Length: 342
Image (cartoon, rainbow, N blue to C red; front, side, top):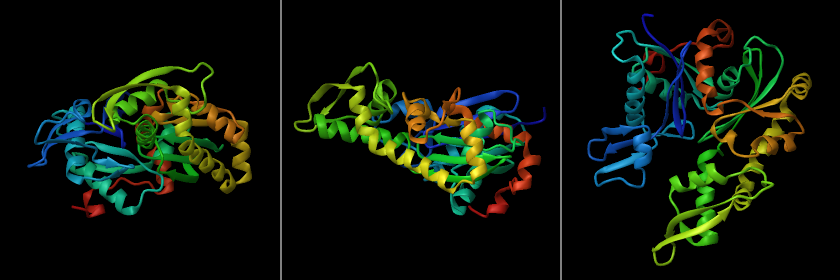
């Protein structure tokens, strides 16, 4: 092998890089810790993630990607260059990259993303919509003509699409996802229990007892934080059904968007989907009861694919070998000159 081709899922919560025939080689939180004076990154990935809320003076932790779009060009470029460097090491050949992008990303967001990836060490970049990548990663054959409904619930956005024969018939992006769940849990704890908790604690609550439908056997956990009044340490006990109740408004918006998708889909594709199943991908697809929530809302069988948080990156690496098919739908590799940014 003279060089690497990479499939990259550059998400709000995590960066996942896959290599054809090797699988996932990088799966790190998309966080950076940087010097506030020079804006040079000190750490990237897990080390920066665990440093959030514990930063020493002169150091700040940030997510350079928000809602699937680049929010800080310099930090995003440095972070991705670090991760790509770990994969390609000292290989003199720069890799081609297929990267996932939110389904309804604007042209400016796409050009900025291509520029960041090329600046981070790629030779050329092809952007493929996230639900299409997720479908490929879930094992959907790009040349299969039957319709498949894919719902990808990530950290910053939820992308939904009806995929047929290597392309998307209908698509929708909802800016409600894992980070919004964390913020809602923080708000709920502040309003009900008068306790302030950090993002990390909210995420732990979501992973440990978060649920999209009420659990048959309720589970509880303790959460530690700071009292709103007085500022002293405070510990409270919360239940899974409380978290389910506080997340319901956000979850209802997601199911409503999925229902609207069917109104725009052709009858034949709806028939295909009805005879098959809906695929749930993305990190938040693993939340307890997420499949039952969508199954009840849509009246269809819903399946959470294995390792849903890795699907988009795996699908991007699959797309590298299927470019002869994607080329028919206008997908092209582009370099920095093509986007003319920075």
